[in-house]
Amino acid sequence: MKVKIKKEAGTNTYNFIDSWSDVTMEKWMQVIESETVSKTEQAEETIAALSDMPKKLVKELALRDVAIIMSKVAEMQKEQNSVLKKTFEINGIEYGMHPDLSELTLGEYADIESFIKSGLETNMPEIMAVLFRPIKERNGNAYTIAAYDGEITIRTEEMKKMSAEQVQAALFFFSNLGKELLKTLPLFLMKQMQEMKMQSQMETSPIDGAGSE
Image 1 (cartoon, rainbow, N blue to C red):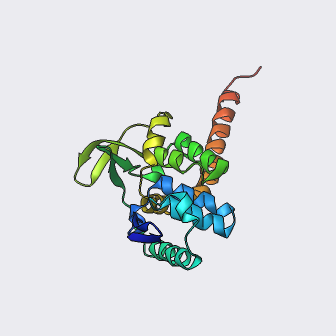
Image 2: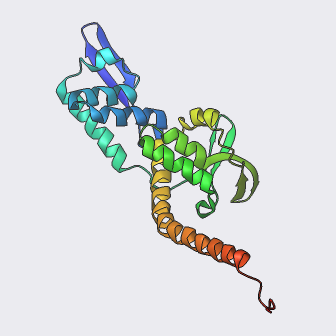
Image 3: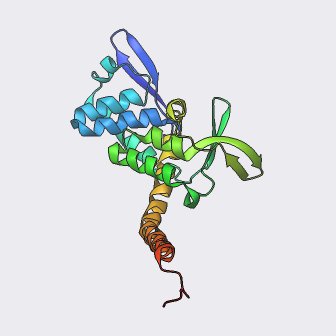
């Protein structure tokens, strides 16, 4: 989308996003951060993040124009594609979402849970770096990803280039799965504890058939 700004020196044209799919996670995080400030500052930060318009010029926009631009942003968000794409490519590397989230290791889930508790809005790249990893093998729609070793610093920076649509779909998908996992995890842990207790009792119980005088 093109935004034309008329000034005394003439008319300048600036580029604005055409759809929400044009928004990267990094840009989306800037938009989210602006929601904690005043409405005018939020509008300023949003327009600056989603266009190549200088901030100084954004401040000079007429309120009428700001209202039109912000309504377009809201419209784009409503029309975004919410279908989860489990694979995507960044800088020539194909990344895939964990093929079976029910098979997440306790370590992976613990790291994701820790990032969420520390602040979902600020730790989205880290969460995506745990869920998405480089694809090692592929056979049609089936694929395997690199093992999780906890080293996500470099991948976290790459994840900032993900589409905001992709991030939102992944978070929604993981959130629903997380609710189910939280229901089953306590039962699983209880079962494990019971088995450990039974094993301990068997190891410490006296040997049957011992003779007596």
